[in-house]
Image (cartoon, rainbow, N blue to C red; front, side):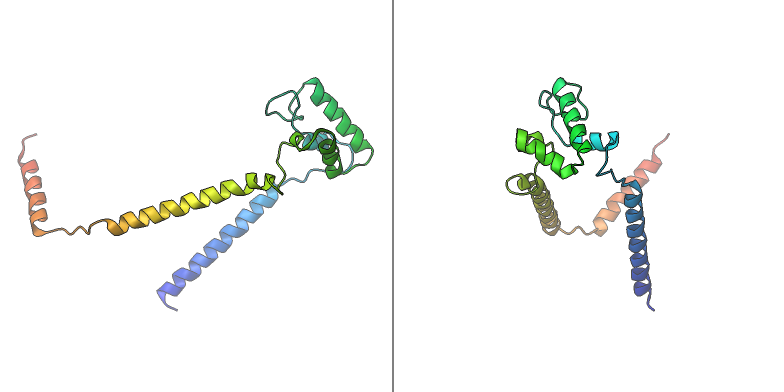
Length: 164
């Protein structure tokens, strides 16, 4: 086995180890929220997806406005009826429109909110990479000449000759 193959093999193991570690960390950090029953955790998880009608940019879970309190009471009532999370969110969308959701839908025009930033970032990255590659190709090659070496040597000699 050549040295190049050994290095490539070591890199493969390193990336595999990093991938396993990343997956393990993500699985450990991910907590599943309950999707049935009546619990405060589920209530605030659902309320966190709804926009407060009186507050600017605040969720129903974080607001203490009268409308947010009523929303949470209604969520609690719907949970007690055995409704799923999607049914509860759809109930609010039916009654208040899609603007009640803090997270825009991922289909239709709302999908642009999710896709457009990724496309712009990828395009900017490609543009930067192309620009850097062009700059590197256009840069003149620099070779050290004997004259350059003599200048450096003379500068060092004059610097060492100075009294301190």
